[in-house]
Length: 344
Image 1 (cartoon, one colour):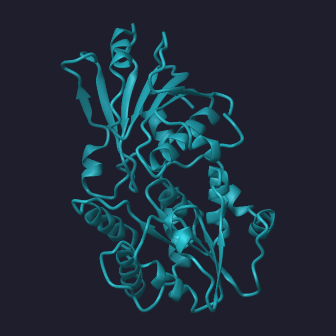
Image 2: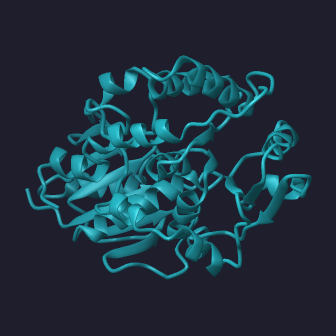
Image 3: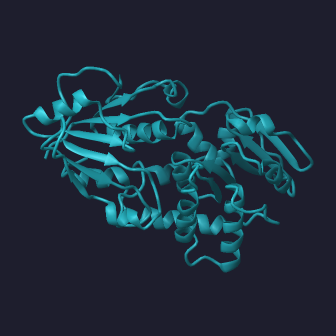
């Protein structure tokens, strides 16, 4: 099956996580020679996420744009529900497009059971079409994670001090660098106290935390501007410890191969707690018991599920081992191409 044009739909709900994933996916597809139309209901975040402009092969359309043709593959990110008129065009196409719902990332057990399942459309404007569900994940029985070709080689050749100097940042002798990208968090003062136990430079991304940071003994702080996606990746590579949130930065922290702490998106019904625990169970499987206990305590506290721990764990070797395990599995775009029977 030849698939040279993909339509990728994303609704920007909040916090830029959805558009972050969609933009990385679009960039990866375009780099592999596939023309991508990215449909957005709010493209404003691309002004800082992609200040260099659109790469070759990517076009950005508004949600209500009208086209006369439908792509060979249609991706509906995170159950965003495609425009009715577009679905009708899909059904009218002589050769139906492959329709994929790309779901949210999770380490929960249902992901392996649900990955690849088909949903025939029996009614409505898409009657006769078949939608398939693709679940990103951390095991070979899932769709894997976004990882562009050559990423690990690029990380290995990265000069962190040179990149920091370009931002006007200079690490002091024996100073660790910590990045912070977070939702509002009542434990931020406790974190700042803990980081001050050794010489630390805290680089803080835009968001609620920037208004709460201040230097203190042992701790220097620096407020960052909005960074492009490549710039944010380099922030993670340059840091010794990364605090991340949501989905996109969560995945990129794992590819950085550095210790990290994840702040999961909080949900009113408490559904975020089992999701967090499911990842911790997988991430810490087989780890040193003391390190595992310290990591679990810190992550749960940072997500307001426990009290603040006495110490921060050192997870350098574990982060590298985890990255190697993930890198042994096919990446998400390669799996998507194989799933629809296309070549890259």
